[in-house]
Image 1 (tube, rainbow, N blue to C red):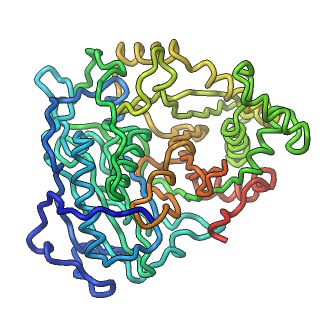
Image 2 (image 1 turned 180 degrees about the horizontal axis):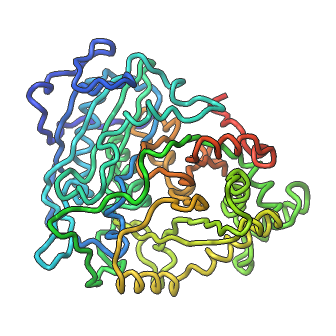
Image 3 (image 1 turned 90 degrees about the vertical axis):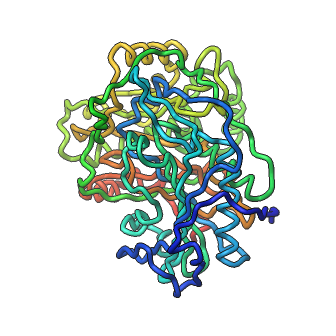
Length: 488
């Protein structure tokens, strides 16, 4: 077990709760929602060191996200071997140090007289909440072969469904640690999506964890060199910010599907028309490492193709000539020439779009669909990124999240993000990833790495009830779905 630090945080505790460090079952309630998750203390945490650099201007990749909800992601952990009061103090103190390393997250958005929007690194601070759920256990959240209990998970996060433009008035990040009745802990982070993308979000999570266990974090790159010289602006007359571009009240079912490493290898073998075992598999495995083999369809592309086919089949109301769209978030850091730093702080993402009609997907197989995705992503290099940036600068606007015609899949997050690796706060690796209600609509999906670290992948899927029911009846799709070994 890694060593955990013990220092005093730079916090402002609410007077009524500064002395509250309750035992489970004896909590003084600040908020008591029906879920049984009760906030018992709230602190305002500031960086423990001053930031010497000035404002950070929002880039062409940051500005479109002003209409998106704050990102809500978090991790379940095993029960720590220390008192809850010590745990809360430890997390708050290490958070103060982490914010000093990433001070933009403790600032606020400011619109300048020329309408540019900047992150003002003014050490305004963040909210840190401690919650308890004495009547709930890990088994209530990580239920096998069942939907995500969203009525519970939504209360693991503060600032529910807050739109990123609100960062002018509200903290750019908020944090909540929730202790369950069985001692398990959930650490949730809510972060402004105009300030961070998934890469930067998980880099900060890693930074906080590293400091908590007494290590030096990897420093992030705050140079605004992802089209940071753009003069394009988004104007919001009267300071009235944008709304999200989808119906937040539309009925949805949410489920996390687990795909084992073996299942993904089988799909990849089918997509590349090769056997999945024996001598030939070994030969093809070596070919996959050959940089001279650009036509290789990746494991994740193969999985996404299977999802695209299955969800399109499950959307019974789509006409055969309807166009289906698969949108995939693309990390531009390594695709630009010259590349920008892998630890560039901010949004450096765009959306790669692949289309096909319903009838085309019905007529063709996994290899065909995977080949379409592969071609779209292979073509998304420096030129495509610069053309997309130029098009946005010519006509600035917010990113249109949603699925207005019912035929779109939007794949976010990444199975390559370090969600399990690097996020041991000092008492054990995370047990599972879960998210809040932010930015969820028909067809929104998020990729998480499998906990085993063996190439398995978890896909969080949001669909209308009737579409989810049809997907669960699809034997061709469900044959690849299994239960993670750590939940058996």
